Image (cartoon, rainbow, N blue to C red; front, side, top):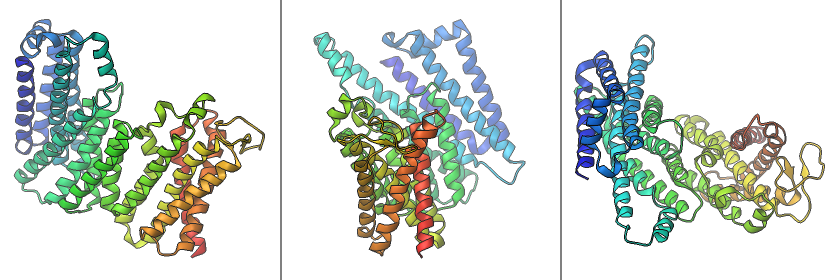
Length: 473
């Protein structure tokens, strides 16, 4: 335990020491520094004597395995490589009208190294608690480990909290010493968005080292939203984060979402609330609630015929983003282009209605007593087939779209009840059938995945709603 603590202290201290140099040695100096550290870490993994010294000095006996030691060294190696890439990108951009601000790179580095350390400490604490169960019957210990649904929740939460603080402090330090003029509310905003992006990539299983993907992804997202120049108060950011995180956590508790979906929904919530308002996010959550509820509808029957959602209907990050990315883009557009607000509202309703209608059509339509038909040739087919439609499914899609329209009016997103129901219901129904058509064609031939079909159909639903709105008005 002592050696592991020494490793964490060294990780935090070295990270802070590197961050302190950011405002003072310039871009060229940072590139040289990160290159030297990158090569030094590479040398440790390639030199048997250095490798042996590091493993003995910084790893406790129970964790001193080649896989564990190599994993830690690889993490550090990939972290400095990814930040080195960002620094080189920033240098190249100096030859163009664009720029990647140094405080963004520093924030990405800070949130990655400090957030990872916080998550690792929490995970190690949980592992030590598991090891303390040695006197318990081995079969009971296995059951405890396998059924621990919260094994990743504390570490992900720890990463998120530490990453937000680290990103803000790193960004503020660099801006202050560079005599920059970036307001602190913008630094807070991009720090929260960057930390959530990092936590998302940390929670997604991948063959790519997360210490490589986290700095790159978080910096790109922070850069994009910084470039928008959109300002929001720290209180609004904090409120949006807490509200979104609470609702996403509730979805996780009732087994609608996994960890990656929890972080994805929180990220969506913060952005949608900040760029539009809280009711836009509640409307989108209606889709997830209805989808999660009706996934459980006659689940055993759907499971018996092989068409039930995998994992008991628990949503993952790809389910969240494929159904919500169009709505997110429209919510952001609403904040940036207020002159087109009414058109954007109806396009948003069309995207959400399509996602809701498609989910209800799939989950309810497959339980119909009559055989469905293919949307392309109307031949009878089996329930659950890509491109299959039924009367019950069409009515479910229409009902789901109408619910979105009614809630939109109740929330004050639009004033005309008749216009909202007409545009939203029709675009949701048509968007759902676009989904079925894509499923029978592009998905059937593996040109699009199910997530790709969901993304394209929600975009289509938004476009259809916008066109109908323009034609009517």
